[in-house]
Image (cartoon, rainbow, N blue to C red; front, side, top):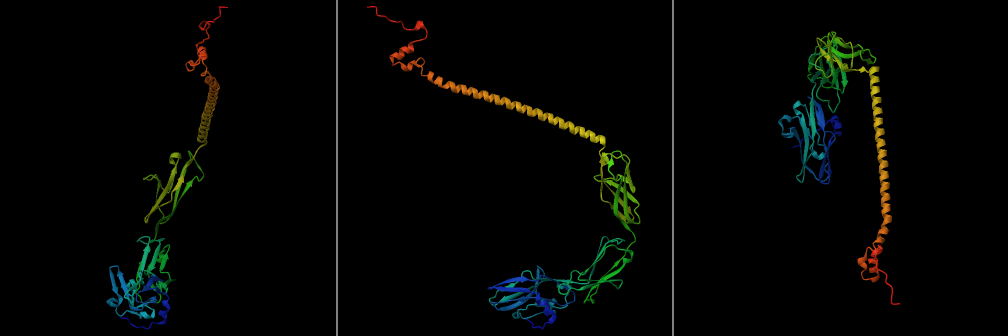
Length: 410
């Protein structure tokens, strides 16, 4: 069921924000210019929507309301919206929803759905998240007990309206205190005694809203803050010097108890506003901090580093040790280099001898080869030659040689 309505020009000016349903062939692509709206309670809001249908006629359209993923209803059939919602004919291209007398229970997701002549349904997955705000005042402070110097933050409402940015009006004890345009936060950075009183807020244009208020009580005094540590002497500390650490703080009333700690130690190493070490040595070196306390609380300082400067005798011993180490290293290095050079020379000599022996063997090799062809040594291979045989049977010993024959018949 669709109801024809006349929308005032002011609301039509807001329709530049819409959900665009653009046709691509027979497919509809869903885009959003906004996805979230903040609305003031008891006001009237236009939830903008626009669509385009180029290929198929829209046969039906509806707005769905989703309080939670498990709770989805049709706006036109929900009793909670009866008499408070209106929307125009979808065939005009404007599908905006007008919601009157907005309630906190209206917060949720609104989603437009339409059907085409072919029976296909189209919607957008994201929809528009509607948030509802009020002039409810929320106070945030450093602690439940507000003291001088504390920090307090006031917040008016849960969100800032998105259609028309309002001015927030802050009152103290029923009188105008401050006005902030488009900013629902008011801060007291350092509370003073005169800041005590009852604070409230309202939203311009919605002054009829019931505003909550908060009573701020400021107790005099505050715990220690801005704690600092100084070191004396401020110059470099030499072993045996007397060193004094002093602690200062801003507190009301003034801090009376001071404790001194060394990092990585659980128990205190001293007390009093000043802490002295009569004969400082390397075992005292480290990071120190103080803790100041009054009747309102306690606070610690940042850690400071305290270390001893090495004496001249210690530096001389260190220098002598370093020099001895350098000399010893040099001697070891020279011995190593000498052994390396000697080894290299020995290796070179052996290599030359080895090469010479190889050369001699190479020169003798041809002679040996020829000796193998000597008939004396290879006699068995020349048995078929008579003269060679005799030669083989001949020896160097004269006694072993064959006798000489002469002709005696002459």
